[in-house]
Image (cartoon, rainbow, N blue to C red):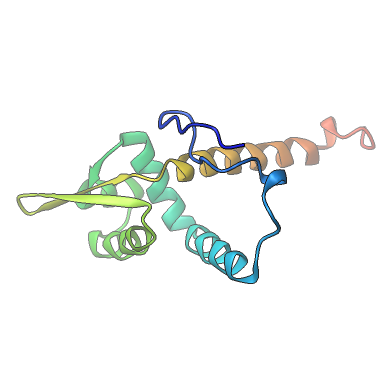
Length: 130
């Protein structure tokens, strides 16, 4: 059953993952391509900076992550090609923002998973380690 899209809280109108049919090879390949673009520490830092600030120009974004503007532009292009980012020009500056709400949710879930795994692997929290 599809639920209505709430742009503020939800990213998808599709049914729960369990209710979806098994991924086709083409769908799996497309999903792998999305994860491949996201599986880059620089692009993840850029996305996080954009999510935190809501919108940044390339120069400010480069300064926030300690990179050169040209290197940032190259990474932003990959994210824009995937439809994750939108841009607007203001004079000579180009401003970027995250437009795909699924990315925000995915990053939040990824950080949650990373923290959970870290907690489980800490000796004082594991029942078999004292």
